[in-house]
Image (tube, rainbow, N blue to C red; front, side, top):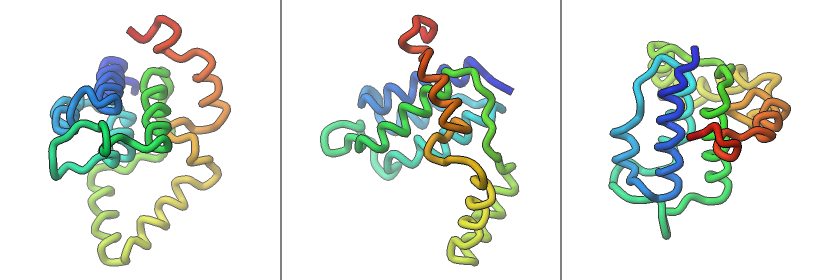
Length: 150
């Protein structure tokens, strides 16, 4: 299921966060609630990991994201505006809790095993896209540069 409204809101919030226009706390407070798996997965596996939530700040100056992290952010924003289904494996909330507990007891071995199985046969360097082809096709008609993103 694609929740275009929630995806658009997360894309706009993410752009504002990465540009340093809003703080990390403002970003967290405005994350849309949705049953679209792309919302939770992109927030949890990408944007939430881009900042420290122990203090409030803008991603500017010494807190500016590295070029590599900015590239991941741009890819996630592009995906959110693409209209594509999120095709990576998604853990249910209870399964995610169990994996977290298993990670504690196995010194992260359980998480590495899960990640290996979840990415088998897929190129993680294009995540959240499923492939380089899917990413390239989306780049050929980006929402923010085609007049369809606003």
